View 1 (cartoon, rainbow, N blue to C red):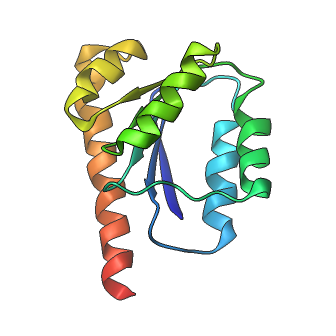
View 2: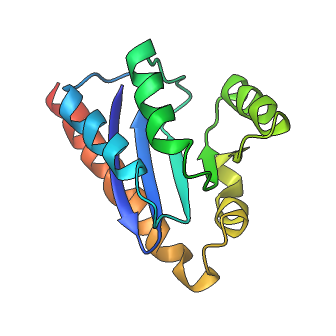
Length: 139
């Protein structure tokens, strides 16, 4: 799994490509970015229709960084199984909500990103996506 991140105001944007592999340093940097008491939320975009494959150590690292803060996370994915899994976590009290790609504005509204800042988040997603495509082309 390849993951990139960028902070936009008080929100963290994650861009994940499930089908590509990379070194742990980028994963560790993204996890460290999650462990921030000043974040107001996370926008996590999963590229394509892939399902992120995380090992036990990675799941534990994400949980340790994310869960203590209880900020909301909006996960954008076209994968229906991922959305169903996340919906069940939301029903169990998790502060996480799945959205389709067509619902990106709704996701940002749910995270209370000001409408005037939506374009900044879109730009960050486009930039992170371009970096991932560039790496994929080199592989």
